[in-house]
Image 1 (tube, rainbow, N blue to C red):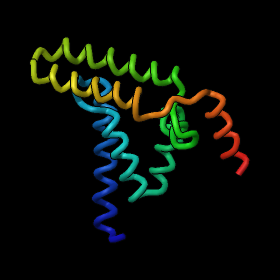
Image 2 (tube, rainbow, N blue to C red):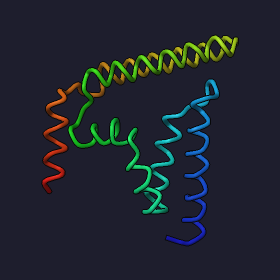
Image 3 (cartoon, rainbow, N blue to C red):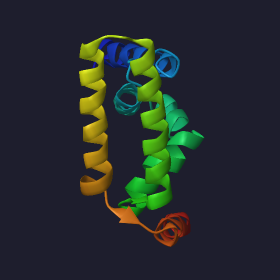
Image 4 (tube, rainbow, N blue to C red):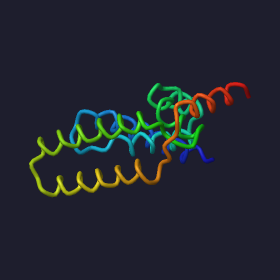
Length: 137
């Protein structure tokens, strides 16, 4: 990969990562898509930064479990939905604009669709078995 391309991707990854972290505190700024973008760009530009982001507790808890076992446990889905809806509700109260409410409503419907239809629900035992099998390799 050309050096300039790699440096631009690395700069974009850090920008997405920082904006994703700021999005935790700023209403309507998306956090998850930015962090996923940062992970993708880190994977393409910097093995060391990619190793760092995939070693975080949040990544191991949510993304790695999905990648290893092919689904998410029901308790984790409930926690994701609860946190997301509380934060989207707070954003809707803080930003008193109907267009933001429509966007948040669409995001909420899409999240419900993902959690109930697209992402399989698995048991915690399946996650543990997949992690044990991966560690044995």
